Length: 478
Ligand code: ASP
Ligand code: MG
Image 1 (cartoon, rainbow, N blue to C red):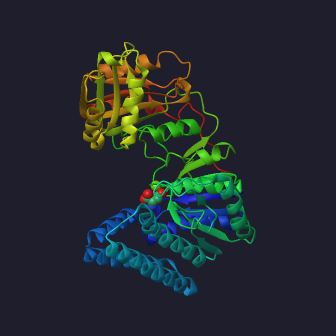
Image 2 (image 1 turned 45 degrees about the horizontal axis):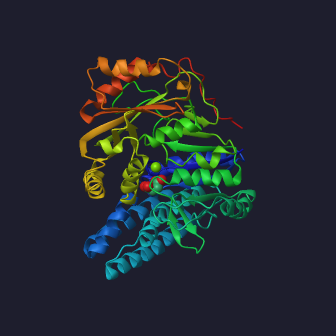
Image 3 (image 1 turned 60 degrees about the horizontal axis):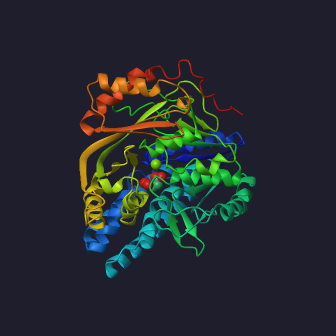
């Protein structure tokens, strides 16, 4: 079997976690499977690198040096615990060189007092460039042949949209095959840095926060692997946030569409674009627990299971509603277009929209932190007050969404949902259902969020998830 395995920051936290992650790779590699590994930075490192970049820009090199030396120490210490013999020498030398280069980059930022998106991507890339050699060193010390590569070295070529680069899929496919197939055929496990690629000029880019998931599926699609295994510190994707719902259950099977919908609606399960590269090749993704590998976890594939109708509840906190109204909006489509154009040209993302059928009002949901900017932009754009008269807002709301392909064509789902919310004494401020019928989302005051999620979880009996639904099958033991 050919597999891509991905390990996130929590599973790369320290020597102990990396050793556990490496042993999951070694188990399969010893069975003659062809394994490609992709890793995140050690937990929290990407955030630290962002801070170092900011501090350098602000001129606080003392802080930068302190953080840099802690970063170096953390990686050296992990190397010492994970690696033996020449693997230890090679890994330590690599870390030393990377820290030196990172120091030079940060000094450059300090001297120029300028941190461009391009230099920020370069600085962020050091997290994964430092962690991949640790995984490789651990594997080699376990007797597995391995080599570490950056995303660019592995053939991931992207556009130059720094901070949120997209892979150029055709060239990437050719390059990844060229680079990685000979390595796999030689019985060597490539460890590829997650999150980073390079543009056509060879400049380092990043795929957006949480991008290692995306790296995993880009590699998977290019190499036409059998499955992608995303290892986690939880059992799989849950029916609701287990911090709110104690009885939340692992969802055995989800379709690509359901996962995308969940990611979009705030469930921080996977980078939102993760499924896109594997969708057309129908490569399944498994979310599995690194602490409990015998648990089948969540299987993500093309076909959904029809039951249960509703599979998950997700929520986005810290949002605001903006409502614009005025007689000028009725039957004048260009006004609506101007509202959205104004927001988008100010870099404000609209998470949800609803318009009354009288067309006299449109409501939109934006992030709390973008509210002031959005209001100002709208008031300036519609300064005359002839088209839009009132622009008002409600801060501190939450979007709740229920997701499941089984809702399509099923009657009574909305009725059940909203009676559950009403019976909990919660007022609904706004509602929207996409015509795909994959989700129903609505907005409530954020203080009502936990109670709403509890009521819905109980109404749809999500605590019984998996009892009647087919379980994800155990991955083949071959
Ligand atoms: N290290 C990157 C981040 O923290 C990418 C990832 O972990 O997937 O966003
Ligand atoms: Mg992640």
